Each structure stands twice: as structure tokens, then as C-alpha cells.
Image (cartoon, rainbow, N blue to C red):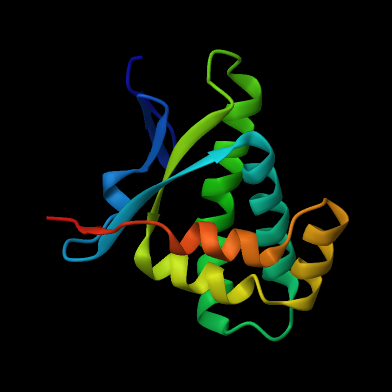
Length: 136
């Protein structure tokens, strides 16, 4: 598969990498494989996190400026590009992974996942399974 560039992501070999302009040297990044349903639920959960009054202003800003738009872009691509497999890799920064893991304990996120037949602890375990490497 050829390399495709988007605003927030680069898609290569069925993996959505964070575009280099958004990466920081010395920070850690890792890949997590998710299916289309999990990605859709992640996007829904991010939306719920963004409007929750108890999240930190810093995380709220990151959600609004980068995290949510990036995952919305991924979600749109996976549903528009019929050549992609059901499971794709997504690169996460360790910093954003930690924030997202904390936010998965929000009551609104927990109830939404339960409605869809998922348990928030499963998502947390999945996100915590990422192996990170320093970006040079």
C-alpha cells in the first residue's frame, strides 16, 4: 500500500501514524491495533470526554485542537476507504494515551460504552498494552 498524507495522519501499511509535524523528539510513541467498531467507540468517547466539566483544561484543549480531530479523520478514512482491513494500527503518544486512559473512567464514557456492549476496563487494558519507543 502506498503512503497517503492527511492533515493529522499518514497512512502507511494499514497504520495511521501521527504526522511528523505533530511529533516531538524525545517523546514516546507506540502502535495499537483496533477494529472499526473500537475506533468508532473511541471517537464517541473522546467527544464525551471533551464536554465533561471535570477534565483538566490542558487535556480539554488537547482534545479540541488535536486528539479529537485526528481520530475523527481516522474514523472518516476507515469508513470511506473500502480497501482498508477491519483492523488498522494507530499510533499514540504516551502522553495522550495516559490522558485518554484516565478519561475512560468518566461516568458518561462508562455508560456509553456499556450501552454499546463494551466495558471501559477493556479499553483501558487495551490502551495500556501499547509498547512505546522514544522518537528521535
